[in-house]
Amino acid sequence: MTVSVRSFAKINLGLRIGARREDGFHELLTVYQTIGLHDVIRVSVARGSGIEIQCADPRVPKDDSNTCFRIVEKAMQEINAKGRVTIEIVKRLPVQGGLGGASANAVAALLGLEWALKKFLPTAERLRIAAEVGSDLPLFLVGGRVLGVGRGEQVYPLEDLASMGCVVVTPEVGVSTPKAFAQWDRVMSGASVGVAARTAGLRPAGQPGAAVPTQIEAAELTVPGASDRMDELGRGLSAWLGESYSGAPFRRGRRENPLLGLVRAGIKNDFEQVVFPEYPELSEGKSALERTGAKYASLSGSGSALYGLFASKESARAAAARLRKQGWSAQATVTLTRREYWKRILG
Image 1: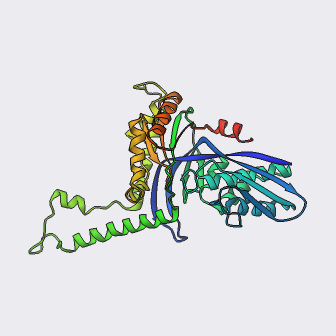
Image 2: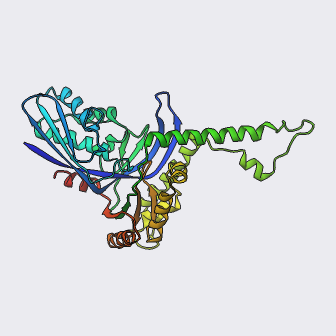
Image 3: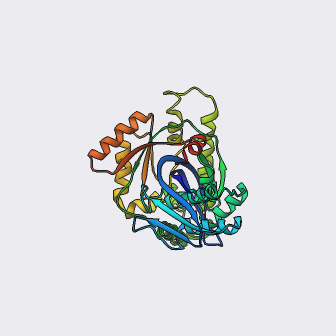
């Protein structure tokens, strides 16, 4: 028996990078949102042993470094099942695109395995195994709009917004997430060194020759710490989520309100600070989305995929067509609520 599962992508509605932890990961704060673009995962179990990965895309690993391999291996041990598992990955999402493709593939493989074997893990065990394999995996066991904290693996379902139009632009460049984090650390380290160097020449107030910084100089000496920046996004998210549920009159219709709220709350993706200078075409892609009418546009994860949210599905389709004429690889899709995500996941 072969089970086919849709492996839906995600976007990040804001992403803050916090302090590096003792385990080498960074603290993160983000809101994940599942969208309609997807790969397809086909899982079959036969007599024998071992795990085989099949994929026509040469960039997808076929060995035990593949997230599908790793999660199925763990699940087989947990379920105490035997057999030869074949996992076929039909790639439609970009590799290293920031859309969670490999993570979504792994969760789809896990679900496909359970359905093929007719053996199902408890929800808590699924989440534990998923978090052990990768930070982004647990969100795909929730779907819809999801708060992610810790290194991103601690997930909390948020109340869904109605489905809205979305356009995803996928430039040809690939962005390595570990390299993006390393560049972030270098930039933050450089900022701290710069502050220390500028501060070194100042003497305590009251001493002879003490320097008195001007208002501008004083502002330059302040670099928000990781916890401050996490708090800043937390306040922005709270304001945005609170506005969504407040029942206050909407300026331009109910469907646009969440997008306007995102903009007003100043919710951004920290990775843009280090990825855009390295890949200027990504910054250009974000601007192109905004010019075609996106109410909110951002890099997803560490990139390279960019997305724009639109007031209607029709305006998203029109924008994608315009972007393709301009030479961009653009696809129109929709955001998926939790109910839609689970309804559509079985292929």
